[in-house]
Amino acid sequence: MIRITTKSYPQGATKVLILAHGAGAPADSPFMDQLAQELEQQGIACVRFEFPYMQKRRSDGKKRPPDRQPVLLEAFREQIREVRGEVGPDCQLAIGGKSMGGRMASVIASEGADDVDAVVCFGYPFHPPGKLDRWRTSHLSSVTCPLLVLQGTRDPFGKPEDVKAQGGIEGITRLCWLDGGNHDFVPPVRHPMEQSDLVREAAVVTREFLNDQAVL
Image (cartoon, rainbow, N blue to C red; front, side, top):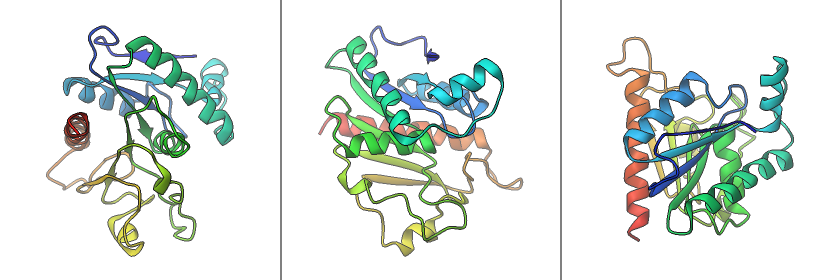
């Protein structure tokens, strides 16, 4: 299984984030590379891995749909077991990811994950684009640890007005809206900020969130 770790991991790391990819792009996509770099600048070591279907795509070049949820969850849990064993009990260990990866992290936390200290979702897929009758949030109220969601205000998988119409989402500790960002945190051409600025903002908010949880 491919694993990509930052240079500061695991020796001396006090904050580690297991960062899973989204449905369509691998662990070393430009977005994932940039996000991991910005998180490391904030003192958060990242461990990236790939789900089985993406590993097969890497080996033969053929695109595949994501594995079924039980397979995705077990692959994620395997990483949690391995990383927790490597960093020890005193390291703050968060799990999360881009879109589907973040959603799988939240499902694991909703089913009970004693080894996990927090969940961070970058572009949560609240619902499929244009399908406001298919919300993927019922499990969030059962999440057993602090949950941060970082969401672009133009994300078709969940915009501010969509969430507001739901009356908020139970289980989310903090929801941070990134102004102008789409599902990949890309703002409009004439927006004063660029994608790199929003990714950096997401990393800063993540560090602040994990710091806040560490002192509780």
